[in-house]
Image 1: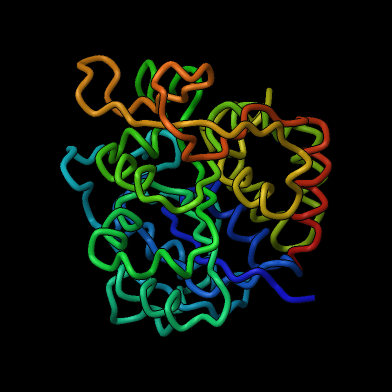
Image 2: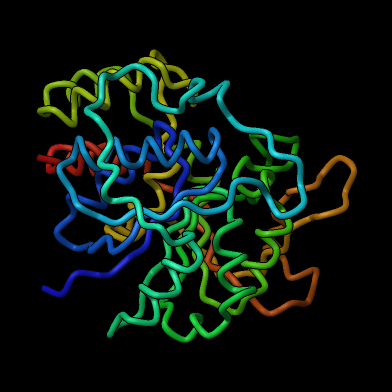
Length: 306
């Protein structure tokens, strides 16, 4: 079976760590590159976290450091959710510093995409700054991108602002550039992320699933994306779940724009389900998820991380 080549653009982050684990240990995905961007915490911390994760997982995937700040917006991280360093609560081994490329993430992505004999799938589970810069500087890469499967946005309410989801709201200008890029997009937003829950009994099962399961359990105890007692939200794993188990989701093809100037709604993804804007669809939006089937899939996926 040919593995699907992907690039993960990330800002680890506790839920990022589990999404990365599932992708790295999947028999169906070939992670060619991991790029980092400021988001959940600072660029230095998320890059350090990515290298620590690879050391822990025993995987030799190159890492490239990307944008330190959003294109225009003031940078505000999510350390209130993920802790000061982004992955507190577990004693990771020393990072694999030798995996860090000298290239900027945008240049590394360009090289990997253009050198690939088959189209690459981009999996951004972070603010879209790096992806926007890639398309602005090297539009020729678009011809060898299969699709973008991103975690971000919402068809309803927000988790950073009233109407804005964190990844999109952190760099709304970048998000708008990506949605207008013409590249096929799948949006896994809050509509599914809020229902992709890991409950206490799941966490207890996961803890017994070897080193990775115990790591997940220890991080879960520090994670503020939901509640350890009432259910933790696995936002980023939804993007990987779509790649591996798309039947979990209800999907609609529609137009998505990003609000840039609204004084109360900047960063809102305007998901035009009724066609009011008279625009051609530019994204497939995941509107719903089978939560029970996700729980089962998630635990099975973590069990394979050995």
